[in-house]
Length: 293
Image (tube, rainbow, N blue to C red; front, top):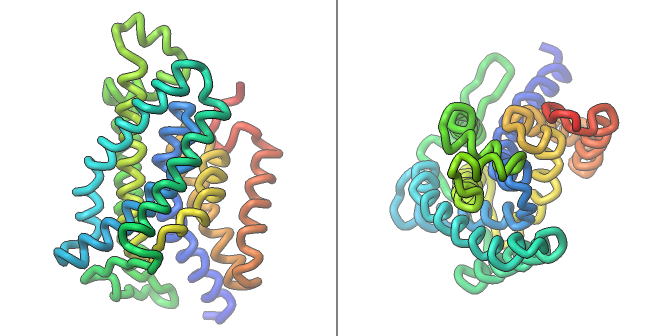
């Protein structure tokens, strides 16, 4: 095989695996931002918190990091439910969620970062797994399990979430809460209770994404900064409330970034990826799978 073609194919495959990680990071934000209209700018910080917690637990117990991520996810759900309760009481109920609510989540983000530094220090943390050093090879294409397994688990979790939102009663209520709250009240459904549950679900997804992130790369308290722009761009490109669009946008984002970094250097990859976002929004302002107003 031509070396340039092999390099391109490996860049595309690695980009798809990277996109799986991006999809995991963006899925929870798609729930909070796209479905609940809660601009949780601290979402990547919760993902990093989950990653560091998983890394510490893995070092102490030796359990698989993705299993540990699933085990800590309920705790993140409870944290999210409490956080949304405070957000609703002090901002959303009074109609101050636009600017003051955004400032609230900025504050939460910095509290998480400072808390991580005070608790475990500024050094990086990493979770290892028994399968992480294995690489499958298909012809000229490398499939490192360190990237493949977290991407597969993340996409499976997003698929399960999509089925829940489409077929479960509570899932359909979550999908409807930002569209017609009064209709939910007529059905004797408390919109605040639904949003509290869904926001907790978004942070549980952040914990799962954190477990995947801890396997893929070392993380420290400030690692969430590099994901803020990416996850919001992916959610917007995918169409806000569309999980399918979120996954497709994440995969495309990962491929564009990785191929650009492979052939032109890593400094060009963010510019090209965000340029692709602008191009998509110029053609479809509602995103790839969003509905036109």
